[in-house]
Length: 298
Figure 1 (cartoon, rainbow, N blue to C red):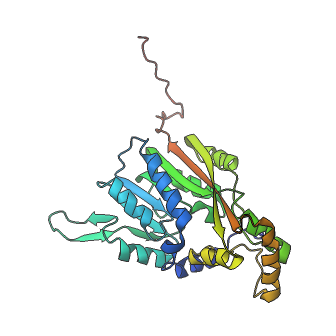
Figure 2: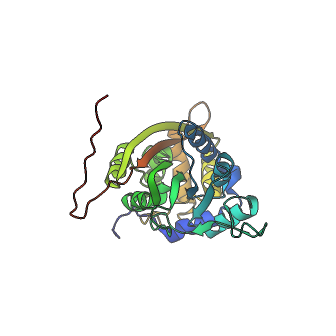
Figure 3: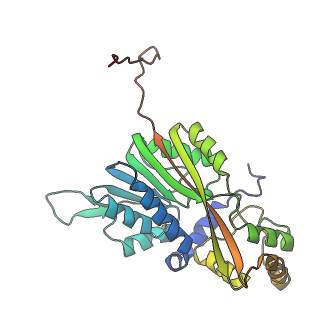
């Protein structure tokens, strides 16, 4: 809906992440922790995907880790910010290599795709695993994104993802709302609502859990600097347009001080982890009926 003040302005978000391509990795401490946790969880899953989609690949760190873990797989790195893909190509030239002609050694190309998660330019049932680390919170339509993940997954394929929950940056949300009255932080979706969306999209056996992180800073400027370095600008439609001035920042600093503990300002992040499977396709007869299979008792 166009009157939703929390709707993400995709053009602004895309431009912000594009500008952050060179500063992202140094500032993305939390993203690194979450990525490592997601990789550890894959150790509990028996899966040998031939093709993996890294949806929202950023600078390619996740794609690189997946390529190392599944050396025989084809990794498709997808992001809506083209400079992020350029960074991936430059930093990890061996990620996603496709041997075009096996007889001609060295004739290869990388699978780097510039596209939006809500409209994947991939064929139906074309990937064995979809991986998405802290990206789907930038979608305006979670149902559309999850339906796209389901569409491109092969039967018995795995979706594994992380995203932010409602408590994320709650201190900054309170402080900026007190200072300006405009929206300041994206609207993050509750874990239970994400689970419902997974079921609506057709996924089976969804499992979700939450972990909370607290980063600490000396001052508000440091909080804002880190967010800018990873491209996480306010891209909601309800944001203030134009500069708010020194008066706003002074009010922001004052309002944020209520959260100071042990000499530090906290920034809370609620991380939702989830995985789900695309069920094996059922056999459907010409009249639309589905057969029921019986096994003899043992």
